[in-house]
Image (cartoon, rainbow, N blue to C red; front, side, top):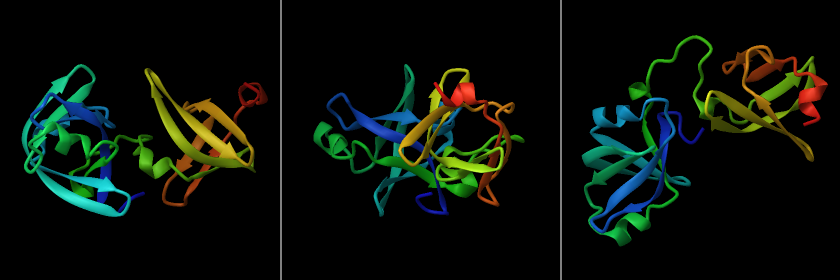
Length: 170
């Protein structure tokens, strides 16, 4: 996690137009939640900067934002790649067996008791997320399904799984 007080909800992909509008990839199930925000924090490594949102709209699968202090295309392009964070207390309430991606990254996965590796990425591929698990030189891509991942405990920092060898051999 970047900062315990922030939750990442997007990543700046680029500029939209010439007036400094930011094109944001939403990393949330509900991109419409951006409408409720007044400010965002942009993260670049350990550097954080707060911005006031002046306008928000949805465009295809992205969110377009105007923020104070970003008035030109060059200003917007300088922010490409930055993550969009909000205070953790503004995060949506999750249902049982739902997790924030950043909480899963780095968790060790134990397959039938043996350490398989750590989650290094979560790919959102339509209906089912796919966990990327890296263990030494080997990388596994496993659908995030309850039949494979029996218990995910973010507090204890552990995932217990029963992943068939056929899936691991893919």
